[in-house]
Image (tube, rainbow, N blue to C red):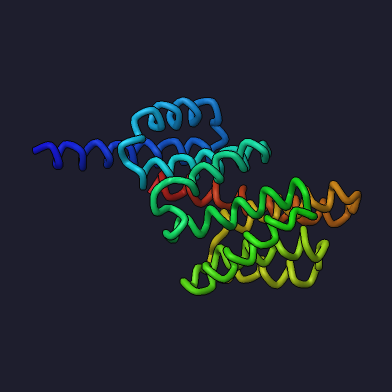
Amino acid sequence: MFEEQQFYLERTLNCRLLLAAIKTELNLFDEAEKEYQSALADATPYPTTHALLLRALGLNRVRQRKLHEAEMYFAEALMIGDHPKSIAGMKTIADLANVRLRQNPNNEQAVALLQEAKAGVTAIGNEEYMVRCAITEALYINEGGNERLTSELQQLLERELYTEYSELAEEIAEYYKQQSLLEKAFYYMKEALHYRTNMKILGSGAEQQ
């Protein structure tokens, strides 16, 4: 009976995690924060879900461009249970490397983390995160190789990963903006908005069917 109760409590936490993630996607950050923090307060007995909540909070902060806070949440998630050895944990390592390199491209520990993440996601064949690692490397280590960026982004379009394409195009636009390469920044921001708008239209159409 106790084990069954614990199982349902953890399932409830995962549902709250999903709800908060949806609110983050919709940029309802205040509502998402309440949901995350409420779930986090109950998650300590469940290491897997606890780590996933911290990872999700990191992604939430990335969406808000609060990179230092994102870094803290990702690092904390990687300290819990078996998260670093899991598929989600390999993604967290990649995300941690990304936010650290965005803050400081000369961070040698972040470069090493990125190589670890690249090897891990390649071994499991996670195509989205293979692209994310390649773009992180192209932007912050190889200083913005344009042909590589185009090639990697194209892989996301071929797999119809439009939300991910939009997110990464926006990150690339922000990189070029900081480099004062405004024409390139404008191109990638236009790409990001195009696919974000199309996904909203598709979503609205699906709701009406």
